[in-house]
Image (tube, rainbow, N blue to C red):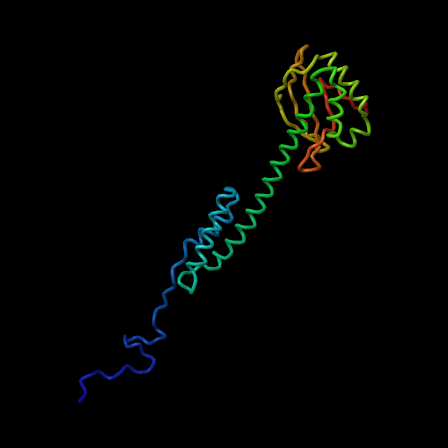
Length: 219
């Protein structure tokens, strides 16, 4: 008589439970995959969240290889989402920065116009190409020069200016109005530079006012 127990019957695991009755244990969820997917969508934390989402997404893909952990789909989705949002945010930031410096250049081009009555003509030649076509159609260089000379006669030369309050406004035409308190030799007068930013990288001057007076003809 054999001293060894008989082999388990077919379909049995030898533990008293059939193969079909064995409990299935799911692999754990990959934290990197979950964190990567969530971070990729956090546009309230631009750049940093998407960079972390990209890194965690790559780590999550590696961690879920071979079914060792769950969440592979989340990890894969985090990568393109992070890349696309990073590209869009970078483009938007670049456009904003270029628009800001474009407006700054346009505003700075106004100051030399009021420095001296003797240099008005040369200042106008440098300034005129920075104006809009609509402005040029209504005001030629000679008219602008005469207007500036009259403004200097009335207010004196511009010594300095500071942003007024409100500093920046917009009108019904979508133009940007930047207001300054101009310190002239004869006193203080409000200077308003009206800009159009149709070109996102270079603003153009559409009007210029000193104490409410403009070189444009009255409508």
